[in-house]
Length: 256
Image (cartoon, rainbow, N blue to C red; front, side):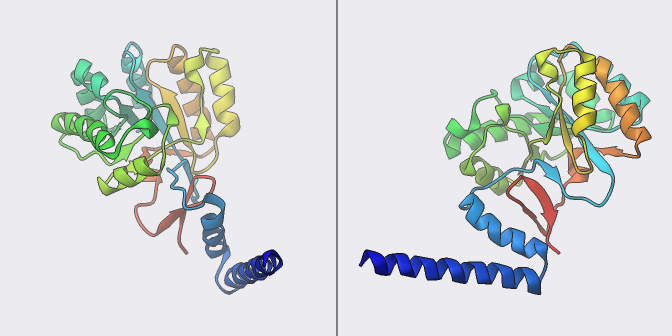
């Protein structure tokens, strides 16, 4: 009996390999990759870490939860370089700095949701997730009159329940593929070297609005990216809205 089961598994695996190879030859690599993702991830849902794009563009983002000491300086720098970005805001930050929220919006930057209380989202029930997202989105929308469509989970912590719940609310979950590590306070040079060495077309870069050296590093990073021909855009202008899939690395790709 065990021998028969083993033989059947072997035959099934051979048939699977033949199917994958056949599909890849008949269609294209994207189809092949999507099929493999089912087996790699075991139906695991993934947020968007970066985007597969033929255009030389990247998105810069700032998470705001603790303080706003450097936010005005960041906004001035972004304005000087004519760059629009995405700010992910926590609900209690919105409560404390409503005028800053208004200014971020008025200066043309996108505002995303970063939760209400900054919890580990994977530890919450579906009802708690809805509450976290809905409360903060309502606060932001009351100030900006713009619908919130993006969410970045605190600590980068997520699970299938979070992504499926957010999607049902019309919200896309966004991570990053370039972490500036600005919150570690290693200094401006360390931030510059880390970001410029890792960024590529389709990258989503993570900064924090109140990290000590971000405002010192930002002009150098923006100047270098622009000199290299990168267009810097808000996250929503980088990601695809339809006809896409997310591969096993978290890269968003068009279905071709």
